[in-house]
Image (cartoon, rainbow, N blue to C red; front, side, top):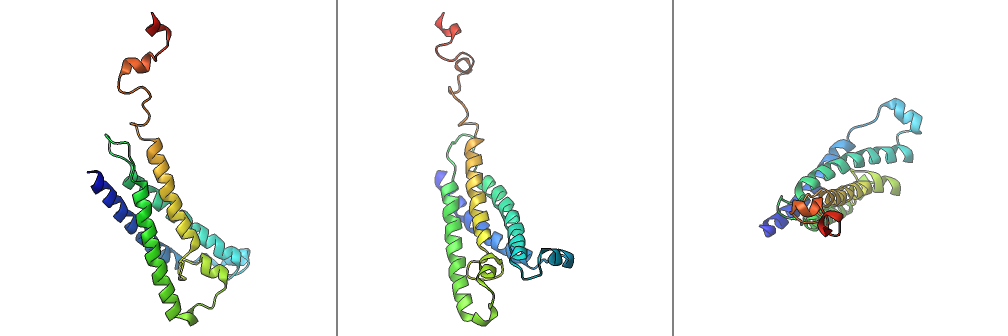
Length: 177
């Protein structure tokens, strides 16, 4: 059963990263109102690009946190999470998207005459497809692993399943008499 959970977590990591990249490309097509562009310094300003990238990264962080928590939380009778397997799947998917982005960028060089900041922050620009997106997905998965381990009821028992030991820890006045 443990191997099935590990394989499931690995493929869940692959699907999570692919879903995050698909969602980020959809969100990259949404634009702010014209008044917001004027207040932040124009459409191509670095502040506007960073704000858009940060908003997309927040959405991806929440998606990754929920998806990863559902994936890595241990079953009732186990204390082991599958966070490392989920992160392995995310890493392999990231590598696949990076290789695809490098080839896409090499085959279409004239389409991307943007600055380095736009290439790093944009969710629609290969080869990284948004640096904050990568950080958000990995951070959400790690945070979900920490939460799953922290809120696991099996790890929170101090003295085992004996309720008398919990009520009267060793060395207390009631057990010494």
